[in-house]
Length: 327
Length: 136
Image (cartoon, rainbow over all chains, first blue to last red; front, side, top):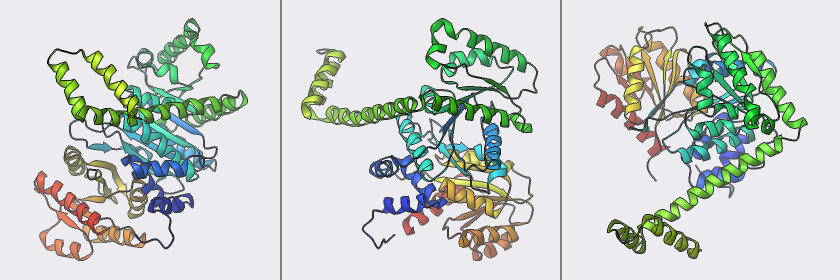
């Protein structure tokens, strides 16, 4: 671990990652995942060096075939001469913090070649995930991977947010599970730039497509379609057989071209930055609030609330005043 | 700061298709709070090395049930050495007692035979990772 120069250890790893060394990229991803000062240092280094990598989110219910489809997409991208990376996010057990990250087995045939696949567990901190994912995507983009695909289960706001703040978001649904309605319910409809009806060989696939079309037809009622500016296409696929991946990728590329042609790419990225900065501020403030509460004055406030002398709302206002006065 | 989460790769090397044991171990380690990157069947030493780099793995667990352990486990250790990756390899499955010494000599960090209790499996992984972290 001795470096000849005065470069910090993180800077040294970053140099190797930027030069294309895979294990250095792997290390950087662990650092951003762990959070803390070193993760911030990685963010300093990677910010502004991500180039023009296309960030693609893939989301949908568990078992919809996201990983299998991602595997097919990656194979197609490689065949077209691309250098893709995948960040596959899976939930941690809320009880033990452990996780089984099995997405790689669906991307079996890709282990060779210049493909980078990383599995990430949610580690139970939704706030942490909201920071770790964009930081990890920047690491992959700064290492020269393009496109960078992030795959998350479309349950929970953070997971939807994470995929939904990509340049292009693909929502995968399947027949026979009432998924068009479910997609509506879960807020997936709003984030989709491309819909994929996977397992299209199964009965009910065309019903699912029709339901989705109907949902999209109704988007004008709320003005959702005007805000989006574009009706998301629906692609039928059978990822297990490798059918449809080419068409899905063509729509993803077309969406990106549309963003660029309509000056919307920068807007997406700006809203992504805004979201990330906001989450970071919240995390910083959270630590300050915890410190305030742990201090004697905070404890006194809490005791007053417990004794019924002060309402929680009044205590919160007092604490906020203290927080602002502290700076 | 607490110890970083343990990330372990679990795989079957070659054409051995008996993966139930591996799935049981995956669940055991998950319930012990580890992040298990499950590679499953038909892996090669090279594919595991590539995954270990990308996943920044702390340990590699191989399950062997077809008497290939004396050939395949040393091949795994050698592939890691060529890649200059110092990651402990733990072998589990059907390994006769008389082969354990040979595997250890080949650089395998630990061998878990049939009937190894859950606590032992978890403990062996933890110790192998602790050792690597303290020397790394």
